[in-house]
Length: 144
Image (cartoon, rainbow, N blue to C red):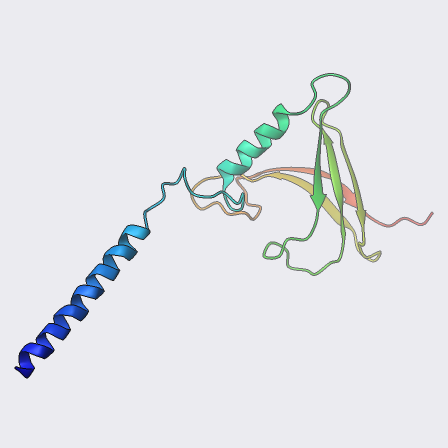
């Protein structure tokens, strides 16, 4: 009789385990890529769509169309620790670039580049030879 009692207990435990496993399996459904939440990070398609939405919302008359981008240090992409910041404003109608930066050390010069980071096999978020580069200018201290 004891063997039958133990066997029933193990069967009951195994049954509960399988039921719990089935509930867990039904609770987790695989999301398709289109259903996945988009944080905008590391998703080039989302960035392109966001930029296109930005451009479509710009006024088409009464002056230039401006794109304003912050200048900040990005951890993981920069090798130095500078507490500098500012912004770059690009007039998309004529291609003029205006920038302002605060907090750069006076002992060095710094170049401002606009880089079109191309996608492709082996490409990363770092600047690489297949990317398009435009040197905007150099920041340096002048005595005045």
